[in-house]
Length: 225
Image (tube, rainbow, N blue to C red; front, side, top):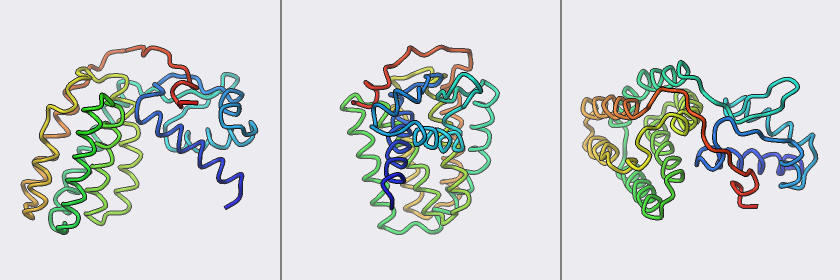
């Protein structure tokens, strides 16, 4: 791996993580000079990183204005969750048919990490771990193409939740992930499918689909630089 590739991956990785954890919010401007200064790289590498994030739907690049963290519209927010509702229940069913005891143990460790993040007051970290939990189910289901689709959808879900989540302190109220683990461990495909349907519906109903302007955040502070 070349130094340039390493720098590019570092920028994409750290910015993506900060977006997923809501340290950088939708609509925030990502100035090339500031990003370059923070990471100690050229603007050419920064542009490549921002284009890579744009390809994943996390950044929008506007002519003569620059790059911004993507800000999903209300219509796009609905479409993201509609797409997840089409894919994930069947994926949960398939995972129930294939899950091994090792898979179940990994999912349980995942939930523990999610709850630990909530106890530390790190809701953004918990949200990212929650998204990773859903990706793990697709991995267990051995549905690589769907897993790739879901990765983009869950990334966009993070943006949607940052904008429209109605009950920001209620992340830990649902026991849906525990119930899903129980169904997966029991090989209960019907149960896993229905639980996933209900879980996604519950997430969607927690959205307040009205226009909302999040408070601005310092990029350097968000990245801990």
